[in-house]
Amino acid sequence: MLFTILESVIVAVACCAASVHCIHALQMGRYQLPAYRHWLSRNRDRILKENVLWAFAAALLKGYLPVLLSMFVPVEDTRRAIANGLVLVPFVGLMAWTAWRDYTRPSKRPFAATKRVRRLLSVLLALCLALAALFAMMKPMTIPVYFLYALMPFLVLLAAMIINPYEARLNANFFKSARKKIRERKDLITIGITGSYGKTNVKFMLRDILSAKYRVLATPASFNTAMGVSRVINDQLKPEHQVFIAEMGATHVGDIKELVDLVKPKYGILTSIGPRHMDTFGSMENIASTKFELIQGLPREGLAVFGSGDDYIKRLYALCKHEKCRIGLEGDDGAYLWADEIAFSDRGTSFTMVCADGESARCRTRLLGSYNVKNLLLAAALAHRMGMSLHEIAEKAQALSPIEHRMQLIPGELCVIDDSLNEDADSAFEAMRVVSQMPGRRIVVTPGLGEQGGKEADVNFALGTVMADSADAVILVGRRAFTRSIIRGMMQSGFSRSNLHTADDMDDASEILNEISEAGDTVLFESRIPEYEEES
Image 1: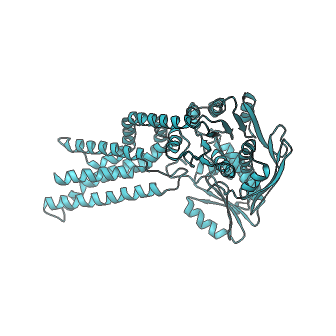
Image 2: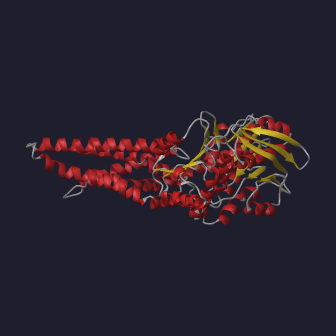
Image 3: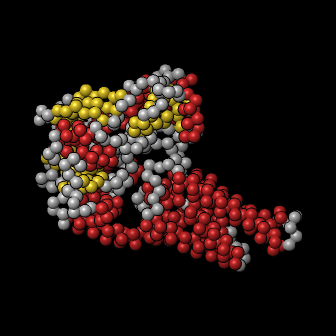
């Protein structure tokens, strides 16, 4: 009896630890239950292959190992003790390895053991212990506790359903406290930044530029939800701060409106509109209208700054009734601020910033790509309207550092361009254009582009055609459904098959890269390498 209790507790704890990938998926979906259910549906094959098969294997071993040992160990109690140990110890080791594998696996947003996660884990453990006790009491035949692992993805869902009402009350109080703090700061300049792509880059660029004139607080990289921004306001906003910049993310209609209600931005920047989170938004129109909630929420004296390059931005710009301006490239008609004479090299980008008021300044930065030029122009346009000269802005731009994994230039024996967190097709095409201007042989490592609003095959085919003109060698990693389309595009564009390599994972790709590269080459890592739980 004592061993049964101990076994139940150990297995329950091990299963909870090994379910970090499920909790991370819930966290990535901002604890929205529909998003988690969608993740479960997409990953049912992995759940079947891993959770269910491993649980059944452990249960079968527990049942049949004593029978096998009966040929060697005559005493039943000794036989059962040995069998229990031979099952329990490897199972716990397997769960520990699974937890470590999932915890350390690279991700766009790494797993964070927040207070909310710890509360969820407490409820999850209580559910596991209750089920383990129920399994033990089942008569005439008890159910092996190892079956818990087969149920873990669904127990995470149940734990979230149980705790969500409490979390909602807690979040509401936290939100009210942050909103009250903002309302009391009449002197504070508040800025909201949203868009499908580029908002994080623009936020940090604007923060660094404005720091020449103001004391600025900006939300950290992953803090773009109502609760994340509330936490920054409550914990970090100090009386000495003059400017607060909030990145505003959204996965559902109304998310931006909630953030606008919290921050009350005087200035708003809308970077771009693209097919992100189509599974929750449902349409491009919903995405555009949700992002436009930032502009609609500006005060009468507010200012809206718009990006350039897509039809939705043009439409929203025309609909805006506030004071507004937009940016462009190379003399874009109607732009307030644009870039001329853009050039890329292994040292970064240079261009001339030109304002509609006649002011201009030559700008040099370590950032790469036209979309980074656009991001910089968005930050510069607002900074200029807030009183900074273009020469002051250009001086600050020279010191800007690229965000990790976003066209990050890493000089060395190989000139590395790390764009491994990009998922935008236009940005990927631009990355190819930048690579084509780099010295040495040009090597591209990519898994292809996912989440393109149902047009993944067409987008990756187009990427292949562009890549054929830009690269001397290509390494395609995993994601067979996407890489097949890339290969078709490259072959139809006349790319040499001998310079095309395929790899199962990043370790395999690294070995190939070591074999084919030499000093002076340029290597582009384009798009996020797929995680194990994503479908191929």
